[in-house]
Length: 155
Image (cartoon, rainbow, N blue to C red; front, side):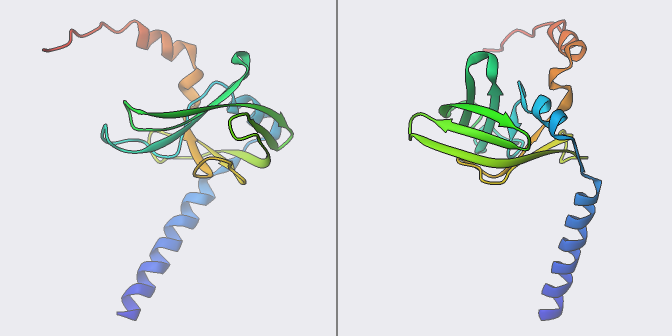
């Protein structure tokens, strides 16, 4: 039994180290730009009941939002933030917390469909690791999506 547990641990470590070796940290300047106007999810939901946490940093709206939710129901918390180098400074008005946390963004190959990973070391609200999609802000792809025909709702 011990041999089986050891083999499983070695396999898991090998898979984890392989996934990490594919990750490439982006510069602080690029990270500050990639952070903005993008949904950062801790998991990709596979059903309407799956719980997920979502960050979205939207400076043109005065701050950001953290969501604790399923696809159709949840709670949210608005916050103010500032990026300074490799740190995010969170101002959480509801709890009057001020949190200064190192963060980094890496390019990654998954889990699908993600190609970006955000790590917030001292995350004031969630899972510390979130995933995003670079193409989320690709307006050419957005225009293609908007041009798709709308299917009627079956009743």
